Image (cartoon, rainbow, N blue to C red):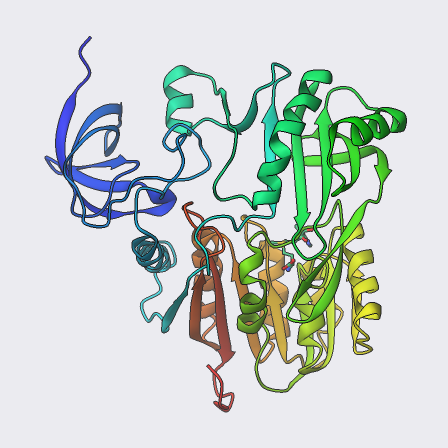
Amino acid sequence: MEKKKLELKIDKLVSGGKGLGRHQNKVYFVKYTAPNEIVQIEVIKEKKDYGEGKLLKVIIPSSARVEPACPHYGVCGGCQLQHLDYKEQLKQKVEIFKEQLQRVGKIKDLPPIEAIPSPEPYGYRIRAQFHVDGSGKLGFVEDETLREIKGYGDIVDIETCPILHPRINELIPHLKKVSLKYPSLREIHITYSPNRNEALLKLVGEHILSESQLEEIKKNYLPEFVVGLGSYKRFGRELVRETFYGRDYTFITAKGFNYRVSAESFVQNNYLLWDKFIELVVPQEKSGFSLDTFCGIGFFTIPFSEKAFFVEGSDMNGFAILDAEYNAKVNDRPNVGFLRSTPSQHMKKYLDKEIDTVIFDPPRSGLDKRDLEVLKELAPDRIIYVSCNPSTLARDLARILRWGIYNYKKAYVIDLFPQTAHIESVNILEKVGIEEEETF
Ligand SMILES: C[S@@+](CC[C@H](N)C(=O)[O-])C[C@H]1O[C@@H](n2cnc3c(N)ncnc32)[C@H](O)[C@@H]1O
């Protein structure tokens, strides 16, 4: 049957980077479009109150439309905004951020919002998770719309990916050879330190590779700058280490601090924004006793200790906590401590103490109910909420603001992920009645 075709004007971009247009009072979401464009679409999903379309033709293009840098754009699921010039991408992210706070969080009075661009819109990523299938293909999973149409997702085989650090791209032909030699591998994860020129690899598959197999891979297939590699198994969202060969950590430098990063620890992806990110999150004035929850390797905790009387960081990842403790020592910071804990357990410890600042930097799911309940009881003077998901941020801020004891003072949209629709933000809340000192 002939598929339904429509012509639409795109009004705006929404969460996920899709364009929104209307036809006969129904909204349609269309990827790879821009505000004010007139486009022809093929309807691929028709629900009662909305539809989804596949872009067939741009009839009148936006002046912000540019030629995507990557030949796989539109097929690979990694990027959503390469068709927009970089300035427009950032403008649209701020608009989507505001829309989420207003629509999901019903937050009426938005604070001043500042957009912080990435110094370079390509070549910024120092972590990658490739999929492999044993046939020599290596890349990212296909765009989700194509996956839905076909009912399955292929791996988009790539030679290079323009958002990755060039050194990660250099590894790709080597990794393809490794995946041909070991066809049971399913994923290869890389963490690259631009400061040390060192890479760590996680080889994820159904079969465990022995240490001697890993040694053979390192010696025969990989360049010198790969300092360590491990064999991992996937259990749902978790990767579990089975064997490792070489060094299982590297070091990064941000804002003059040195950090050890173990293969299992999280590290912020856009290395070009590390210094700026720390500047935005760490309060500029002197602070009292403070907490840094979801602290990872102590990325914010260590610099924060220069301003605070004492900072205690917490995270559920035991490897990250060991890194953080080590990092406090190498950076000579006596006024920091770390513990393995959830945010709610961590905050509970201090319910009878005056807490100056609490930093939250949760995964995409945001804070849980218990975290918010204990936060309300703790009532610190300042909350700094770092978010990688505006919709869970909006949900959590809505609850916090309903208590009536915090003002939403300032937000930064910091573009850690150019070319993609991911939106990272730093949000500053202060207790009502706290003296407005210099800062923000
Ligand atoms: C977005 S990362 C932020 C890490 C750190 N702030 C940084 O900038 O490097 C989120 C961190 O939350 C931790 N995490 C995830 N779920 C958690 C939970 N329920 N309780 C405590 N930590 C958790 C992860 O181990 C990870 O280190």
